[in-house]
Length: 167
Image (cartoon, rainbow, N blue to C red; front, side, top):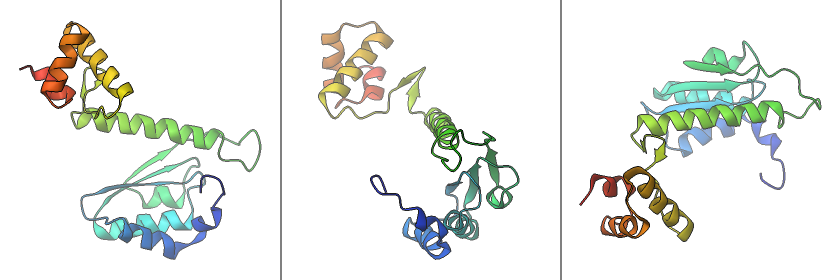
């Protein structure tokens, strides 16, 4: 799907329904269907299966009054208007969807307690770049120097959250 478009998939209701079950969806899960037009059969079938299973279902579309919005418990309709190049929903519609999903995931991270102030303290620093970022964060938050921050992070298995709690 990255190097070759797989647009035909969006027309298959069967594949959409199967995809929900393959993902292991269950009651209490939150599912968001995303389609610029708001009527892709694959996405609609996925959402229908999610509803049947007792999921909370959301829709993110770029048109008003769509079948997806009607099916959803929560509908976000980003009315971006016609694309500059007609037929290319990868432009305004896709950009607006990415921005909305970024806001949504940021809110979820905050609600789940993955942040401290405006710092992502629930990250796993698994490489040199991320470890340097963790050290920098701990220095900024606590005022300690880099050596002390690195030692504290090492003592807490590089958990920023635990390092903030102290020794």
